[in-house]
Length: 346
Length: 170
Image (tube, rainbow over all chains, first blue to last red):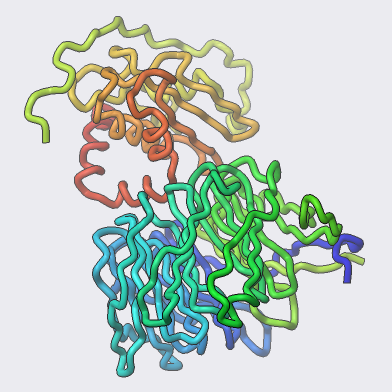
């Protein structure tokens, strides 16, 4: 299946209106046709797809909990819990009870705005990060209990995003200090340390790094930045799976010249398409060129660029986990969430 | 909080006369005028007679009652605008090289433009090259959208910004 050979278009399926301020993040539920979005209006909206009409509507609004902007949201691997990170310094955990959501716990500790939250692959750990420069790891105990397991210091500035590796308990964070840090507990005793820092000296970004995303296999990752580039990184993770110690990440490729404003979000689909969303109001889609260059390594081509996908900055792009169709959600400063479908035009 | 003023004796310049636009050849009331440098300049400096554009007079230096124009913090050359690209860049000169008020001034300029320009506009704010000790750090902070958003949720900061912009609400 060579995507580059087809005429592909990103078609707008539906526009989800309702938020009364910018939408910062959108997250697909891993098991059901549900989408969560969070906003500067201090609320989280849960959108559900009707099995009959296939259209999306707002099922519920989670409000009156966070007292400031909700910056990001993340579903647990089981799809039953939703974590929401807020500028009010807290992270709320919500349980889907069917007809409503209940806030079952509030994680406190960060000194100021929480920017991002991420669940590990098994749902046994949560990670959060903040403008206070720290990354916190929380252990998920039974009975709606969450315990702070670790406070990780190392970044010298505001931490923008945290993300657990898709298969290993390795944590990644990216920051206003222009670096990406990798955190690992070698003895698996919960004692996480920073085992690698990807900075300018290792072909890293030259300005704030806003987001990270892994491919399905977990052996490649893409990062995006205020320096207007996307960078692809790779690691020999089979080494880590077989317990041979830490496998370092190396720079593979830099994608530049596609966006002329800060790239706020990037997401790698399960069928290998990288999406980007930026301050130029455009969505970019990239694929591996499949040119096997032994010297320069892999290279990526622009599949398509959707200009004016929104009327204002795009803050988040997320591929749906659904295998049926290539759906992409985007969230913007214009207050909208849009659902797109990548289709071949006849 | 520093008790004394950081810049006790600022140099005050003459205020320019308000300019009257003479190119009123377009009599179609529904036509949209492209936004140009003069208009942005006026947004930052003067009142306007047009009913549908609420521009304010001046932005004040937080330490002094004089306007940013009078203190030469902003000049005509401060504004670069491209209406077709919906882009504006404002370059300002803080009154003192180590002026900690530069963040408030920069934030005020951004808020003023955000409130006056159509939402399609991309706004970049920076300090004039060579005018501030921590120029790069200041520029980065002034243009980090998330940091600006969080700052504008801080009631104390919002109050200071509104103070700077207050001559407009007379």
